[in-house]
Every structure is written in structure tokens, then in C-alpha cells.
Picture 1 (cartoon, one colour):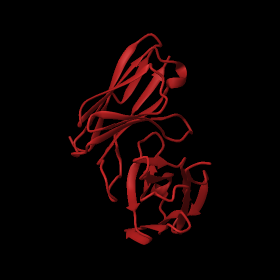
Picture 2 (cartoon, each protein chain N blue to C red):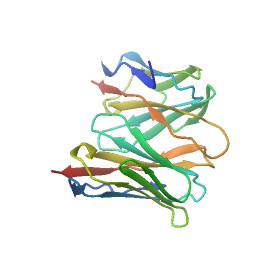
Picture 3 (tube, rainbow over the protein chains, first blue to last red):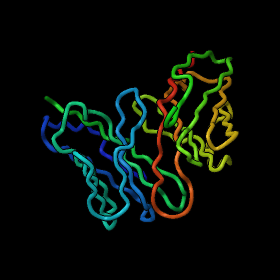
Length: 111
Length: 116
């Protein structure tokens, strides 16, 4: 069983719509959760982190955490073609003291 | 320089060569990481250093040898690599310690390695 699981996609969303990216994790002891954006051939770039249940908003991005369901999501409002990238979800494992990455979801914003 | 820097950005080496990758972080972090990312594959954690001490080696072949002289610098020494070692090698840094909160890792731009 993968510790951090994401749908690989591709997820295709029209420009201007809301893109919804989902992630589940297996370790209930995970404390912090991260979303990274990675353009092709580039390194991952941190865009959000969240560690409390509920929503956290930053500009067009909203991270949502539900620890009871072991579920993290990222919403991107008013999607732009520049949002087309692979989005990596990651969870901080308190027991292992390390971040576990999912395999990423490829997002494509179509004009 | 700010953030996490890596040199070289691109490297082509033969299987008998010896080369080193360098990483430097300017964020005041105390943990550094090496990751490997092959084409269309997820990130693979290779090594973790906390306060200059290696705390993780994810069954990485001995042809990869890390070195962490201080909490700001990290090296990956390469020798007798195989073509399947061709990948993007990423360095990252973070704070490390007890308690909840910032464990986010910041990545360098990576070294694109090609083994011929």
C-alpha cells in the first residue's frame, strides 16, 4: 500500500474553472501536509502546506485537510494555462521524521 | 545566493568516470536531502542528513557516496555509474526537530545527469 496516494491523471480542466487535486495518506500520525508544483524538467516548488483540519487559502489556492478521512486536497480557482504541471502531495511522517511524497497528478489547463 | 543551489546543472559522464554533485543551502536549515527522479517516476529519497549526520540511506548502491561537511553543504560523489542512473538529482533542505510545524522541504534546481 502506497503511503501517499494520488491519481496520476492527466486531469484536464478548462481555463477559468476550478481544478481539484486529491491525495490520501495511510499514516494517521502524519502531522503536516504539503503541495508542490513541478513543471516538466524543473524541480518541485512548494505552493502550500497545511497541518490543521479545515481549509487554508492563499490567493487562488486552497488546501483542505480532513484527518479523520486521511484526505488532503488542493483547489485551484480561476485555472490558468500556467497552472499546467504535475502536483505532488507530501505528508510528514512523525514516526519516521521524514516527508513521504506521492507520485503526483498531472494537471492540464486547456484554453 | 538565496535558497538552495546545485552545481552542475547538467552533467554527462561515462561509466568509468568519477564526478561530484554539489548542493548549498542558504536558508539556515539543519537537514539536507538527496532525491533521484527518473523520467515519469516519483521522487526517490536517497539520503538524509540531520545536523551533518546521515540518518537515512534508502538502500542506495555504493556507487553513490554522500558527504555532508556542514549543515549548509551536501555532496554526492559518483563513480562507476550505470546508464540507468541517468536522472534528475535533486537536493533539498528543511528544518529538522521535534514538534509540529514547518517540515517543508525546499528544493534546488537539480542536476540533470546522463550516464553514457
